[in-house]
Image (cartoon, rainbow, N blue to C red; front, side, top):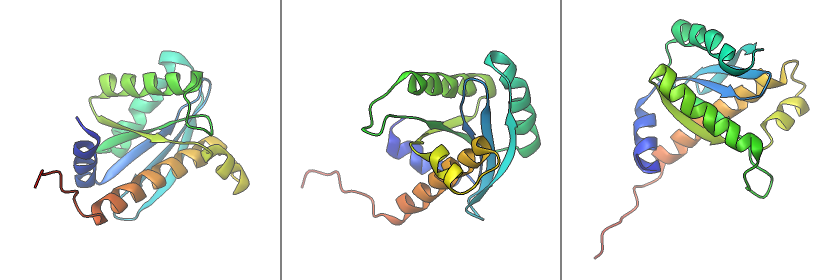
Length: 151
């Protein structure tokens, strides 16, 4: 599915759970497009496959239309080891829960969360990731469709 098709599908969705993936802790947040804001959920303190059990509980409780995963990059946009890990995590979520998963560039989300005085930087970062994603849907919806015809 192309990025344009994915964004079109996402604009029809109303609720999301976002994850700020970490090797030992994964921040989580829930938000709706109607409000345009995200609320922190309990940070998941588990590694490997064990992290999916609490995630399943969150998904069952909140019933999101889709999931959002923050993907870290170096400041220059280059990928690194955690980029690969976050992308693998996104694929695992798709396979395990059968929901559409959107990937969001999350550079500086933890820095922003800490600068804002977050007590739980992982959950606050997940909120930042989700709010950024929802703003991108609204921005994309406001832009005119590009003309790809060859006149």
